[in-house]
Image (cartoon, rainbow, N blue to C red; front, side):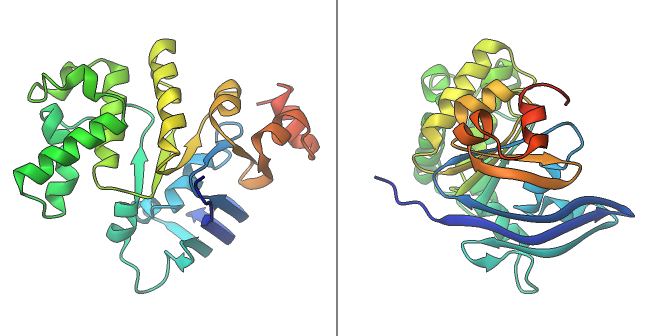
Length: 254
């Protein structure tokens, strides 16, 4: 049995874009090798929060952050921390598939190459393993040098997941990874998420309540930049403690 630990912890996390206070006093602990879903209406801060976990908000002008984000008990916003090193450990999959205009092979090999891996045997092994882990190998193993753009939307999204896995992260962030996909492709991604938690921690932003209920073990409900409720998904959906959570889960607003 996989032993879990607190892998991401936020303490009094606040974030502003200029004068706009987007995240307000977020205190949250996320367990390793679990799937945690962030849910809530559009504009509540879900995507902004996960971008704090790999310091992607650093590249946004007029962004100011206070509080702490601990990754394996180390504050990733500490003065001596290299954001690039954090991003090697915290991969990201975006809302729309965004493969590079390269071959399937080179998409997956890109990250390791940037990190200095040039041995073809090692790259071959990493590419195969990553495509296997992303449940894509059987579909593309005989066409690795074809353009990634020739893949279907669902395959492109799994390729982007494979690209994230190739740098051997500990955490995979997924920002509405199925919103641009059809139901069949969505089901494949959801099955993949279930398998990934055996080796990775997955944090998914989703606007789809049914998807959150299907794929996650923990859920965090956010509203207007605040964390309203966090707990096991079953409890959040069946017995929410907060009226705001219940109103959202039952579809009264959102």
